Length: 150
Image (cartoon, rainbow, N blue to C red; front, side):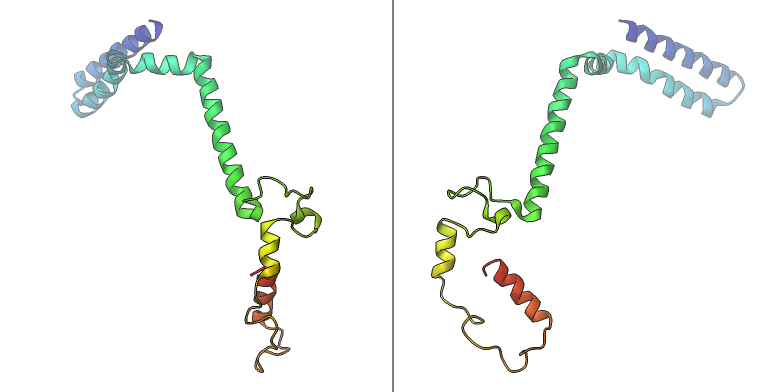
């Protein structure tokens, strides 16, 4: 109710200023002022002002925004953790502590698969003549792949 009165007063004042501007033969400026002056009363007539005041002054709406913000924060944290390599480890293995943090061997199906895996190209054979002892980028890549069990 109060917001409707304030908007009507603002529109009336703006239209008064537009009339004074038109009286001074500045019709283009008067038209722009009148256009801006009609916005508040138009918002009241469409009901948008009531919706905005309900949005601003209801605590449940702010609580809803808080819940949405918490949801977004949890989503971002889970994505960041997944990118850092902690994804897929929701529960510690059956043996107790997490092998990623303790350095203990993994217990379960993943450890069994890696132990039974046949030797690949680089395992069990000597390195080709061109790469032996060079310490180049291939050695670094190979070390990273071995670290991850690939």
